[in-house]
Structure formats: structure tokens, C-alpha cells
Amino acid sequence: MKRTITHLADGRELFYFDLRDDEDRSAADERDLPPRPPASELRYDPLTEEWIAVAGHRQSRTFLPPASECPLCPSTPGHPTEIPASSYDVAVFENRFPSFSAQPGEYEQVGGLSEVRPGVGRCEVVCFTSDHDSSFSALSPEQVELVMEAWIDRTAELSAMPGVEQVFCFENRGPEIGITLAHPHGQIYAYPYVTPRTKLTLGAAERHRERTGGNLFADVLAAEREAKIRVVASNEHWTAFVPAAARWPVEVHLYPHRRVPDLLALEPSERAAFGPLYTEVLRRLDGLFGVPMPYIAAWHQAPVNVGRDLSYAHLELFSIRRAPDKLKYLAGSESAMGAFVNDVLPEHTAHLLRSVITD
Image (cartoon, rainbow, N blue to C red):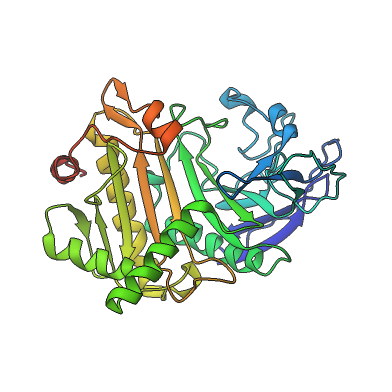
């Protein structure tokens, strides 16, 4: 693998990850770009004890352009994009419209019980392939490994940045999910706090350890592998299963068999084994209803400074599609109360996914 770092016209960093060592990445970004926006505001919600990012500049971000104007495709004569090269394997760059950044700004207190502070952190875009019409499920095992190397590289570097408390790699896929760009890509958020979901699960893991002496995530995996009924697919190093208490109509979790706090701790054999299983699961999702499955793929990694002995790196994959022509909307119970009601039996979802022919 070859890693090359360069800069875009407004000073943002761009990283190329290539399978070949002889790729030329000297093409420069010659666009005339506006100044980078300041970091967002973080406002504290005393009712939930959570930080809310307010990033008004994101209202002007690019929204579902035609393929001929895609900013994630390689640059061509007359159409410069975020990636100056004429082709690439994997490219990662700082988001032009970030939720968090290190750019200085001015912030005023808003009164009441809410505290305001800068949304210091970083947001990056990960382009999985230069092929606009492809998808993660169509990537070769070598390309998936390269994407994973990019995730690992960026997790390590972002975790070392001042003020960063958690690094989150994820992919949003499909207009139903709310994507703004159709090109196969994901994102990485470097948060200046530990996210609410992670706090919740680590709290549960700590209480589980106090009661049993075991690791909660490892015990969940072991129980699912023993029950078998919700296992969708597995190999020597990974198991994919529908959780017994799935919130979403289609939800699959992928765990390595060995507990690691983050992607950096995976052995080469574990990294190599991830791609074939994950792309199989994605093809099963696409084959479930005969239409491309909208989904969110979320890597859960240990925070930078806390809970690392409790964490268990894993991927959670879920979709809002509950039937070929029906979506799961987060209405009153889910949105207002955070109380999920799943319309589909998890065991039935697992059975349907196992029944999909992927070859």
C-alpha cells in the first residue's frame, strides 16, 4: 500500500491510498475556493446532558448533483473536483462542510442553562472507489482491505489530535437514508466528546463486568454464536448476526472473534477476512427485497481516553427499509421518547438474509 498526502486549494488535507507503489499523485487542485468555515458551535442540553453541534454553514453543502457534476469523482478537463487525480483507488480528504473542525471562530454564550463552546474536531470523507456507479458490496477483497487501511490510518492520526475524544467511521447509503452525494463514500467524525450511544453501551458493559466478571460484547457474541438462529454468515475470524433485540427492520452486527478496542488492533489475517464476509452481507441486503438496500454502516470503536478496557470494536449495519415498498419512519415513540418498536421479528430477518442467493 502507498499513502500520499497533499493539499486542496483551500488548505484541506487530501490522502491517497493506492494498491500500487508507482502511482503519481502530483496533480494539483487549481480551483478558486472560498475560505474554510469556522468550527461549529457545541451547545449543551442540560435535560439530556448531551452536546449538540450547530453548524449553519452545512446548509449550503452540495445536494444530490448529477453524476456529471459529482465532486467525488476524479477530476477531468473542465471539471475539477475534490480529487485532482484522474483516477484513484481510495481517497480521503477533509470535509468542505464539516460538523467539527479546528478552524477558529467566535462564539457567544446564549444564556439559560446551555453552555457554548467550539466544535473542535475533524470530519473527513472517504471515497471507496473512483467508480461513481459502484458500491461497497462490489469492491474486491483487496479494495476492502485498502479501505480498512485508510480507516486504520485515519483513526490513529485523528485519535492523536488535541481535543478529540472519539473517532467514528461510517457509511450512509441511499437517498432514503438522506445522502447528499451518490458516489460510493463514507465519512469519519473525530468528536470532541464521547458520543451518547457509546456512553450508554460502556455503562452497560461496566455494570455487566461488575455482575459477571465478563465482557458484555464478548458475551453477546458468544451467546449469538451458540444460539445460531440469528447468525447470518461467519468465517474463521468474524460473525455477522441479527441482534435479538434489533431496533431496525434489517439490522446486522459484525464482530471479530477476538476482542479488540479499535480497528488498529486487528491482526492482518482479521483485516483480510473482514471484506469477503462484509460484502457478502451487503449483497444479501441488496437481494432481500430485490432493490438496493439503503443502510447505515457504523464502526463502534473505543473512545480515545476512556472505556478502552470495556470496548469491543464491531460494525453495526442497519436499514430503515422494512418491505420492498415500505420504510420504517422514526415517528412519535422513536423520535420523541427514544422507545423503538420493530415491525419485523429479528429471527425472521436472519432467516430471510440467509436465504438470499449471493452468487
